[in-house]
Figure 1 (cartoon, rainbow, N blue to C red):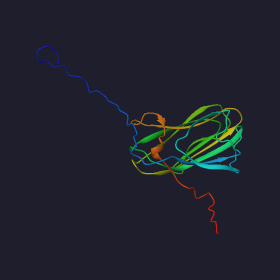
Figure 2: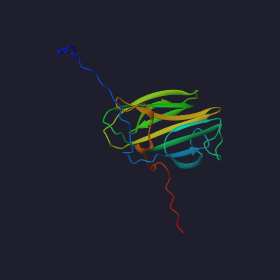
Figure 3: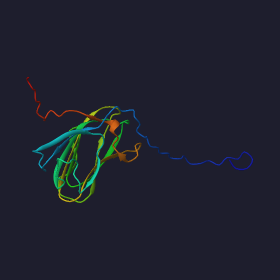
Length: 178
């Protein structure tokens, strides 16, 4: 408004906003299988990691694992609070593969210094799909991170509340008979 009730037309204003994922999801993280080797043949330990945001540096993820050479497979399910295309970013030193809904969207299985790679997947809100991130460390510095972003989700580490641990059908099931 200018002066005595004179209005000047204003072009429409484009607004953008971010959804800050809250605790709407009930997830607790992903199953993490840690291996003593790069080719994932000698299992060291299994645990649930709430998020994938690790900067081990020259340290080991666990005292039972050598800090020089190891690999990790995180798997379970993921859901998003929105129906849209989400960009995933991995930041790793060394190799990484990311599968969402059984589709390989990031594939950089090679020695590298800390490098970011991106891939996309279109979600239906609150629909769980399989997720699997494979990582290996080969000497020196170790780092593994998984982030997401979209037009309504600010770039951030994927929150644990949207990650659900599930047991892989590729793992053997051991039945103890006493």
